[in-house]
Image (cartoon, rainbow, N blue to C red; front, side, top):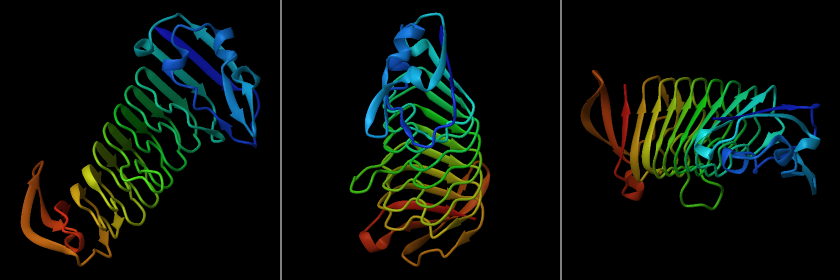
Length: 252
């Protein structure tokens, strides 16, 4: 087992682009080697050790490497980008694009997350023990697919465009979501335990389950009776018929 602990030396106003911070890049490296890894800061690159105190215990493969952030990293972007194995634990808030393009491994955030959490991820798991901003599990603008696999669990609320262009995987939100969750979806599963507004617009495929209140339900869904999930009976709607969609929307 390899454990890498990071804590900011001081709060940063300019965002740090930390796309190199993941178990794949840290595995088997000493503290001095990790300190030398470059990250973007403004329009130039600087060693990671310029910003973080770094402690390393043990040495192991990526699968057995855990990275722990202590404190607020709400101005540190792209933590866990493209990671394929291992674990990252963030004990504080985190900036945008955390877990972008993940292929495997696990990220646990004990705080809130900014926009684009888990965008275009293909595998692995993200657990957010707080609330998230916009575009959780979505695709970047112009992309045909957002999240393709893996699972995101949000134990708080999210803002608008949850799972936009989602093509696979699973998202569970235990609180409320903002406008247009599951917009333009083409696969995967979204479960919302709280309230949602105008869900599943232009959905072609996939399943959306909403356990709370639904506001401004689109008229472009065809009612197909009921469906029972885990002992709960939901109204079953299929659509979005405007685009010949076959997605399933289950609401109470």
